[in-house]
Image (cartoon, rainbow, N blue to C red; front, side):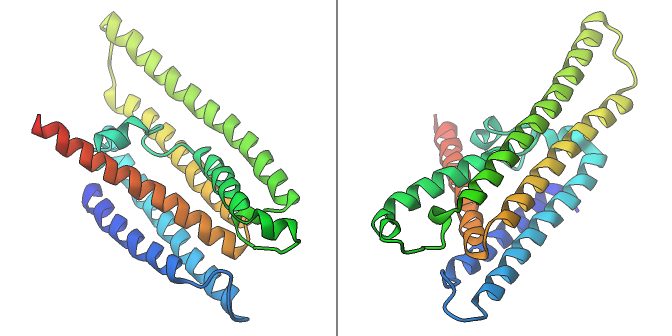
Amino acid sequence: MDFQKFYETWYEQLHDQIRQLTKAPRPPTTDDGDKQLIQLVNKVMLHFSEFYRVKSLAVNQDVLSIFSAKWSTTMERSLLWIAGWRPTTAFHLIYTESSILFESRLVDILQGLRTGDLGDLSPAQFTRVSDFQCETVQQENSITGQLSEWQQDEAIELIGGTCMDLEKKTERLAMIVKKADELRLQTLMAVVELLTPQQAVEFLIAAARLHFGIHRWGLNHDRERTKK
């Protein structure tokens, strides 16, 4: 299947799954509520895993096409890090959502009432998020360095007129994109794992809404740009 067509179908299915997450009672209203939330979260995570499985196959076939991300808007492409979203964005999202919810529930929290949402992260959770963020930053920097090295090597060969063996060079680029995608999925899975089911649902909803919002802004920008 053409990856762009796959992406369009995958994107619509993600919309449906996020709608299911949004409708789920939070906090859970029954004893089986946590199980329901876990099932919904697992469904979304499998959806992301399938995305990166298919993307890996597409990278093998034509990494340059994947790197250009033609299925995205121009605004989205301006925000990409190695053909996708920057993994550390997940941590910024957690901190932002936690801060917003904490302020909105401040009176309840001061009275000792637990909300169970992202505004109610425990000290242990904050520590784990911080530690994992540091590890992810290091891995991001390493992969960024590999891409910079690849670009520098290619520039030197192009300037010197010695550019040869294009297949070998694109294979090297494909490996870099795959490493970036592995880090993206690894980060997403680790973040969800350290959250409670309710918090994981809220995180996935916030992440998807950010994705959807940027896409809509990008579409509007591209439409206005074509009118000029």
